[in-house]
Structures are given as C-alpha cells and as structure tokens.
Length: 205
Image (cartoon, rainbow, N blue to C red; front, top):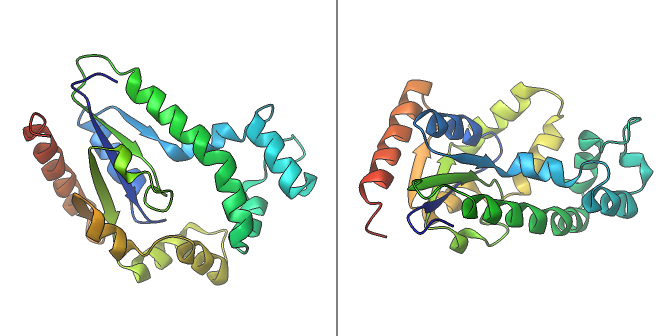
C-alpha cells in the first residue's frame, strides 16, 4: 500500500444506499472498490469458490450455464445461519485478499481510497481500515426499499435484514455516518462533507 493512502471502508446495511454513496465518492475522484463485485468473481465458474459452493450446496444452486443461481443460493443461506456462515467462509478470505491487493497496488499519488464492504463489522475486519463510514437509514426505510426492488417476499426481505447487524449499532461504531433517508441532494451534501473531512485530516491519522 502506498504509505500516503488512507484506507477507508464504507459499510451499512442492505438497501441503506451504500452503492449510491460509493458512486458519489467516485465522482469526487476517490478510487473505489466494491466487495460485492469481488464476491461475485469469487464464485465464478472455474474458481475454487464455485467448486466449494457446489460441493456444499449441491448442483441445485447452478443455473443451466453453470453459474451460481444467486437467488436460489440466497434463499438457502438467509434461511439457515449455518449455511450462511459456510458461504461466508468461502467468499470472505478471497474478497479481503483482493481488497488488500487493490490498496497495495494504488499509485503513490493516491491519498484516499474507499472499499464498499457490506459485512465489515459482521466479519470483524473494521480494524483493517483507517476510517469507517456507515450509510444508514431507519429499518422501515430499508425494508420498503428492499421490497421496492422486487424479487423478494416480505419474509425473505426480513430474513436479509435480520442476518445483518442492526444499522443503529453500526452507526454507533462508525467514524462518519451518512443518513440516506432524505433526498438524494441531502445525501450528496453529506458525502461531500465526509469527503472534505477525510481530505482535510489526511495527515493527522
């Protein structure tokens, strides 16, 4: 890692607006990486992760083209905490190695970079980073947004929320909190404020 690059994690809960905030930071010129994208790659056909998932959950989690059927896999792991832990044991080490490699490959001129990691606190990796930002909104807003996306029953949506640490607990542990329950303009303003704070304190770690 460049000695001058500050490692920042962006986390929150499902449907709290993490991806939106990450996009805004990127538009401000901050290098970013998304753990969800890395997790998808970790389960691509031909990878050890793909083989491990098929071995653990059976060929019923595969689509006809051989890719993991993420909807089917989600139905299994969010209904069974043990199954979810087995999946995370497969994906998390790969994802965190990729994130560490990414930070390590940053150009010497980079002073600040952000990794979007949904399960940062649940996986106990928050100490790997210099600062943590939490994108937060009330649970009823999370649930409403999740249902608006479609594809999930109310029960499935609740299971996904229940599988994560309560957002208010994450917010208490964060260095910065971005409340995404208002307008996009309000969220944009907060992203800008956090960016300025991180940038202005870059030499006072």
